[in-house]
Structure formats: C-alpha cells, structure tokens
Image (tube, rainbow, N blue to C red):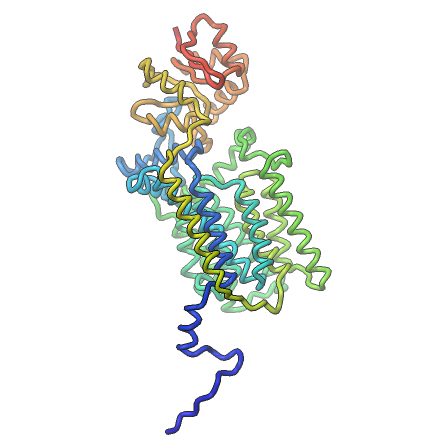
Length: 495
C-alpha cells in the first residue's frame, strides 16, 4: 500500500518529530512569565520568620510530633486544660517536619514553595481566562499584589493554596482538577480545613457560585449538570473534613470564632479595612481596577453575569469588613477581572533564543536568594524584647506567673512553653474564656483596675511595653520592683 507524503495543514496536530522539535525550542513568553511569578513568590516566602502567631504554631507542631494532639490548653496558667481545637494542626505538623529536616531554613523553603505556588497558580489561572499574556500579567499582578499584603509564614498561606486549587476546579472546567470535581473538591476541602479556617470562605465562594449559576439559568437545574457535581463535591468535602483529631469542631471553628466579635474588634487583623494602611491602599487600587475592567467590558457590550456580580459584591464587602479577608478576596475576584478583559483571538507565543538567557537569569536569582537565606539567621526577632527575655532567664525568673503582651507571648511560647514558662494569654482568641480576655483587654488598655487584676491572677513577673499605662502604675507601686528597662520593654518583679 503506497504512502503519500504531504505537508500538514495549518492548525493540524503536529507530528511526533515536530513535537520533539518544539520541545527543543527556546521557552516562550508564557513560560517566562510563569517562572517570573513563581520566582517572585519564592523570594517573598524566603523572608525571615518573625510572625508572633507563627511562633506558637511552630511550637504546637513540635508538641504534636513529640506528645500527640493536645485537646486542652497547654500554654497558659489562666486557662489550663480549657478545650482547645488546634484548627491548623496539619500546617503545624508541616512546620515541625520542615524544621526537623533543615532547621528554620527548612520552614522558609516550605513557605517559599507555598508562596510560589500561589503566585504562579494565579497567573496561569488568569492567563487561561484572558487568553492574553500581557493582560494576564497585569490582572495577576493586581490581584496577587493586593493579596500579598497579608502573606506571612502563618497557616493562611496553606489556605491560599487551597483557594487557588478550588478556583481552578470551578473556573476552569477543562483543567485536570476541573474535570473531576467530585474527586478534586473533597481532597482540597479536607486538606484546607485541617490547615486554616479560611476554608469557610472557600465554601462560601462555591456556594455563591452555585446560587449565581442558578439565577443565570433562570432557576433551571439540569440533570447531570456541572453545578450538581460541584455541589456534590463540596458536600463530600465537608463531610470528609470531620475525619480529623478534633472531629466536627474543625468545621465549627470559624463560626465559634465569629461569635467572639466584641473581642475580635480589638484585634488589628479583624478591624475594618483602612486606607491609611498599605493593605487598604492595595486593595482599594485592586477594587478600582476591577470596577474599571467590568465597566470597560460592559461598554464593549458584555454585561457581567449574575454569578460574577454576586461573588464580587460579597467578597468586596468581606474585605472591607475585616482586613484579614484581604488575603483571600483579591484572588477570588481575579477570574472576574480576567473575564472582563478577555480577548477572543489570543496572540501566538514567541520563542526567541534570548528567552533562554532571561530564564537562566531568573533561575539564577532564585538560587542566589536561596543561598542568601541559607546563610542568614532563619528567625528575625528584632521586634520582640529579646534582651528583656534574656535578663529574665539570667535572673532565674522562668516558671513564675508571667504577664506579657499577647504578641510577645508567641516568642515566649516558642522558646520556653509549655515546660519552662506559661503565659497569661496569647493571640488564640478562639480558645481563652471571655472573662480572661476581658481582663487582659483591661490591662492592655490601662484600666484603673489593672493592679487588682494582676493581684487576682497572682502574677509574679510583668514583661510589658515601655511607657504604657501599666508601666506607669507598676513603677509607682511599692509592691513591684523594676529589674530591667530599655526603649521598648520593661520587666517588673513582685516584692
């Protein structure tokens, strides 16, 4: 049988030889931008470890590996044994394993991987929706830049990785994750729920998506529709999430926390968004760009669907309501902005040979930054009263009833808790009894009853910010003796 050789028509599937030749080509713009976002995220994640909440998360991860899962408070003398749901137990174990493997540098590598995944995943998601690499870069920079203001080594980063995965499932049905929502969503939701309470926002996003699609389809639910698969995946994921060391309480955690609104109102990350802060400015700029993109799309004759309006309004309000939602909201809104600036005829990618040099340069930067991170201290504790803590240890004051700031309590727990030193409170505002939190808020605000509160809890040592009202009260009280003072902190001992 004769075989006729002919050239492939335009748009035909490349032959095996052509595919091999393509793989040998220089990287295109899409690859360069993907690597650029990944390297940028990697650099951000390599920052020294300093967050106060992260410090007790790390200590808890070590405790779990050594002793098992705690179900009651182990860090304070004001609420010992109080029921405690370690909501981020999986992330904490990951921190502890990374530390056992490579020390603090290992944790920084872990955080770098998470940040690189979020940044690169966001760009690739937007690229598929805009079909234009330049517009995708602009949209991704706007959204990731606004979200980045809330990035740190806290477990939220694990939650943002879960969010990116969920966005791929919902927004890109043809993706590997999106083709199997009944399998992918339960896995993502289970992992996310064991790492961070922001899984509730992911469930809310998916719920809004389903309601919006229902409204767009005029209340018609088609048998076998994708929306049914998404709803089923969410239900399976939430059901599976109760399989953990704390059972259903993992799912109830966000509701329980929100029930403490009066206490949370005094916490910086739970306050309303402010344009006087960098995160407020970044999110306001993103919101304006989103509004401009939607308006431009409308002017071109493409009105936003009800689903996009519903999701956008809900998450814009969530971000304004509480600063902590700024980490999540811009990423949820990225697909909406991407669809608004979508082009119908994507430009072909190019593969000039100098792209290899650019790619090599970016990867060299990543290696350089990694080497620099490995050669420097993993922890940055300059914002903590390290000298005061060292003085306390030198004077054998560890083990006494210590009162300190809730932020500083994190470094105390990481260094000495719970075997050597317990704290009055830390920032686990979901766990402490409200009466204890009210007393601490009174101390923090310089209440006239501060000294009587200290006496009631039989506090022996006070480590407190200098020049605060409590410092003045203790300095004037003959029952207290100052043993240390610097520009930032003071230490008082009873008697």
